[in-house]
Image (cartoon, rainbow, N blue to C red; front, side, top):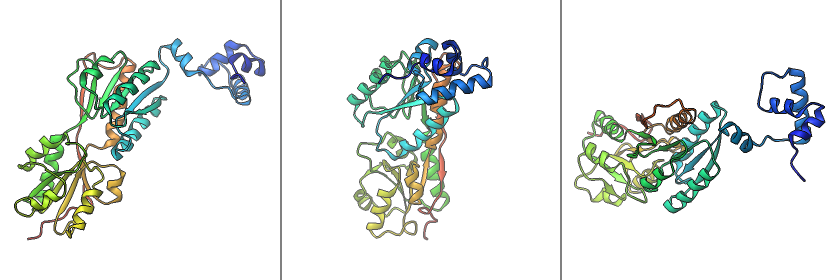
Length: 312
């Protein structure tokens, strides 16, 4: 069965096709009574506007693409919430895809988005090479979570150095001087350099390395575990009282961290998403400066149950 058309709606409502078109575009030139008649006819027939066709005529379709490099990363859910909230404020829809953490799949996913002639796209934590991202910029594009040296792409990132300094300062204020940093991610965290500079010693890999470090640590900063539950579990299994023996701060703040009552430091993921989408939509509507922007979201430290004063 064919989808109902504008002509079908016009026939049902007893009006012209041109009038139905005005109603579907939200024109203010149509009176309330005739508008309701057309909309009622559309509901009865199950008519849905063809956004793609409308967009080709108007130059914009009101749909933007979102690539999540890895949908299994808990923080990406909060980032998506920020993207979706800002898009809804501007009556824009999202088309979501993922690269499943693999650069080759990301390349294919981005190509698929661009083939649809969407208004633009936000790439969240892409692992593709910068040159591969740069080559696809014939539509507005924003990269979130990674800063590229591109003359054409807007980037939104967190301030890694500020997050590390904020965490160390918080622990120091609680009396901690022996602070270790662990990286529990499946691949080396890009935050390592900032945290090594803040802590003053190399980042350790794996919870077992914590017990081999010279001198007991009274506080631990954790990368690659945005919820903090893996680190908290490892400490508890080792017989540590958290925060009595060891205070714990993780870099990240998805919902799982709040549920586990883990102290976190990170740019608010919701704010990252909101800012990235707002930046993209400004570019789509030609309201952005000609030069690409490098926008940074400051970190937020959220103190919960895993940090406390050092025991003398």
